[in-house]
Length: 119
Image (cartoon, rainbow, N blue to C red; front, side, top):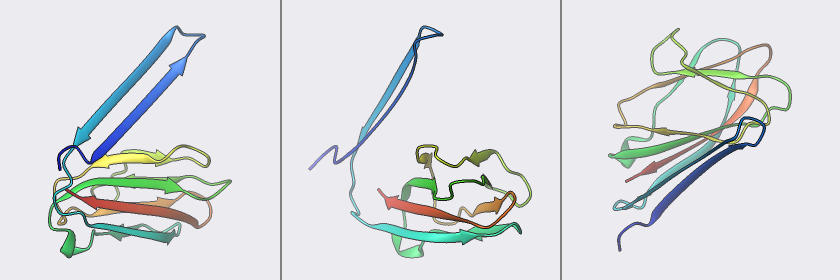
């Protein structure tokens, strides 16, 4: 079966007159995924997808904390994003299970839900 994965993101800001919607549809050949909740502390921690996933496609990150944010990046000490409390899940497109994700909480430890889908 084709196009088993569908991702849609919409941003609408009427005061700026902006409405952006992006959709993606793709095949899910391996039908494998990894889901976990990781408690991320204020010292940098790394996460690597399970090697059984082989071809990683998507990584969803959700900050479960109600107060503190978590920084994320693909190199130690180099954070390119932030998971704020209450934000919707962040979707990353990842090429390989050999890619490490680095996470660090700002003020206090935060639970981060990580869901990785193999394509």
